[in-house]
Image 1 (tube, rainbow, N blue to C red):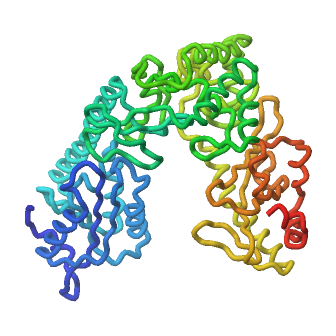
Image 2: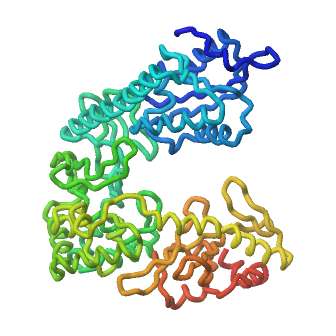
Image 3: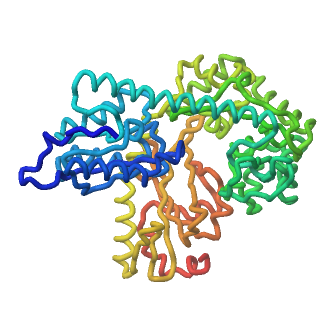
Length: 522
């Protein structure tokens, strides 16, 4: 540690200790950067310079590549810019702990926000004084570039290691998928245990491979292929049949056209290990890679579907797009982009009457090439974000209406702050969800209602938004026992059981406590 009098311009007017804050961050790159070690070095520096640490901001287990996810650094900057901070300087272990931002100007910008507010940032383990001199500025710029380059080099090394393991047949992260499981093996490929969701290997030399899952799940995967190939059912028909049977995906969710399509097109079901189909290194946006960039190991593990069945399913999927020429397919993709403001493989696979994402890949040599032909560069969809922002802002008013209606009729309403569920009359729970309006290729409106599969509220009040997503179109009051039978998407006209729970206003809530119909449903 280099000792210098960095506190001359920070002297407390009363002659006491200088109040400072400390910022510590730990990712997973090296133990020497543990927050305890950082705090010890900062405390020693503060003691030598007559400083008193009055506040600590810590981001543990957080990457330094971006501000996103670093709540403590965000809070620090907010406190500084508000003018309410009671400290005169911020002590940081070194430049890399402030961040490994890939654009060094971003790191400098956050430091500038502090200095502009009259609060200095001091790097206690760096061999320079952060005094704003030209030499210091040059050294800091080099240090920031070195911090960013470290992450880039580490990313390259990690990726190379992952590719080598994939070619050896080992699984490299992600959900195994319905009908498959992750199996832990040692360095001699001896089976140690089956990993459940959330479990990971703890010994560096251990590896993970995929194996067939429970026989009932394998049977369902095989049934999906038979229904698609032999019975000619569409992905949507298969998804609806699975949902009616009460069968959930590996993530405990309802089946959709897209999730069924993934089962029919993912090579892991024939035992192939495929990696790097998508990439998003160093916090960059996720992109789909061209097939020639995929890393493969064929026959890496035991499949649950025959190669012949897989090829037949793929031929059917590709044949569906043959009735469209290139111009038609691109026009449909462009129209989808115009409606939603963004496109992706998952979004494409959810569309009725449109070629699948795999069909676009086969026709144009990859989704990225198809995107380029319609002038689309994958990135953040700000229009979609704006709609979601409005829905989040509008939701409290809906909640207030629901609570007011129930209380007006004499019902008691309390909210669980942890789960967000409402407890009505100390007897049953209620959840409120908003369904965004989407438009199909033909121009008809559709809504997706997502039920809370974990909390399982007794009643779900689903608000269907109008075509502008600015106001409510109508309401559905859905008992828990009926959610398993609910369709994935609602259309403008829904008959039978679905329509019987549709209402034009929230006044129906006033009858919930009195109607035997709801008591029986609960």
